[in-house]
Length: 316
Image 1 (cartoon, rainbow, N blue to C red):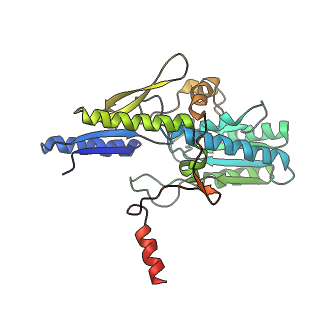
Image 2: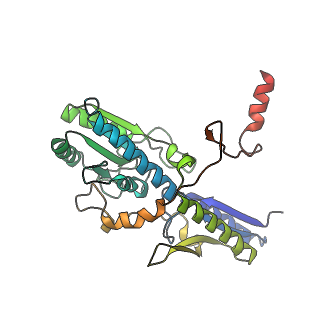
């Protein structure tokens, strides 16, 4: 007797929600289906940005800032650092690394996005140039980099649950290229799932907008609307967002990529337009409740495997 269906997520989730809505209509089953955007990839169309992105961008930029300072302070060890960021086909999260800069020579020095075809020779030239000027280099690259033929530079074995090639490991591939070509020590960093789970450094703006879209989703359903995804609409003056909506069928399996004009002409950085877009999304901090010096995250026993843990405890 399910009458309200809210699906929170990104592209694949909106596709699923659209299919559920279509099936309910075909079966003449009364159910309100609403998509609630949430993805650190920030690649859903028809919305200015996606809840989750601001916090992931804040975490990534802070990590680049901190590890960049570490590199600058200890260049007698690894002289080049490569950080691999999430982002299969859209470089929104990778681009957010640019928010870490306070001065011109601050990390990151080079940013490589999946929207631009990757060229090994040009990559080495870029790295050598920065290395000659500074004596070290910090590179941020998207896991989804592709060559001129559209092939991923690196893919792991198998596919994910949606049939996509598994990514992850690009940083080590680029590390090998640099060490072979330049003969210097390179450190490869892969933040992995920390990019989407690091709730200890959430953007207050992002948290507020996540609540806003969830609230609007419920309002739409209670007003009899269905087959929609909630969107965020940015005001043109001072930063502020209000909600809108779009048909799920228009969103499903459509990716919003970084606009070409927001990518530098050299193809290895972003422009000021991106910075102006992204900076407001990372503003403010959320004070988390803590226990014994660590965040006290909520747990729902029936959803988090507590039964398994309880059974294991009894068995021991």
